Image (cartoon, rainbow, N blue to C red; front, side):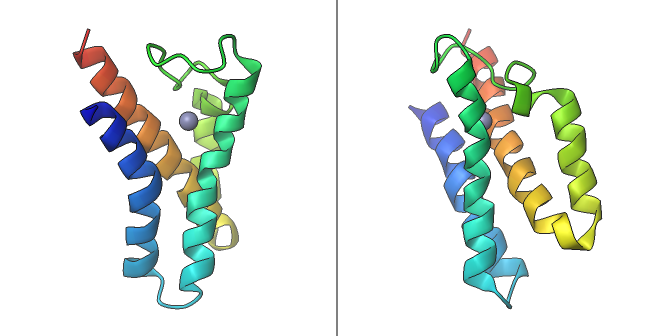
Length: 106
Ligand SMILES: [Zn+2]
């Protein structure tokens, strides 16, 4: 239950907090983009089973692989794509927190 709260807490609260704290302009737009970072979970649809609470997303799904994470950091380094990179990295952080909690509970 705690794991669930932390995972979805990062997915939904961190985008809102970052938007409110760091983006005074276009605040709503930024928050929506950051929240949209969750869409990369679409790669779970190619996995079998689609949802497995015992599985760690990072390094397993194509959009959660290490080279994908590298691209997200690349996006972060350009002004124009920064907010998108940030959205994706928040997503990876959320999943990563989820993974570490999963490993701890084993
Ligand atoms: Zn994910």
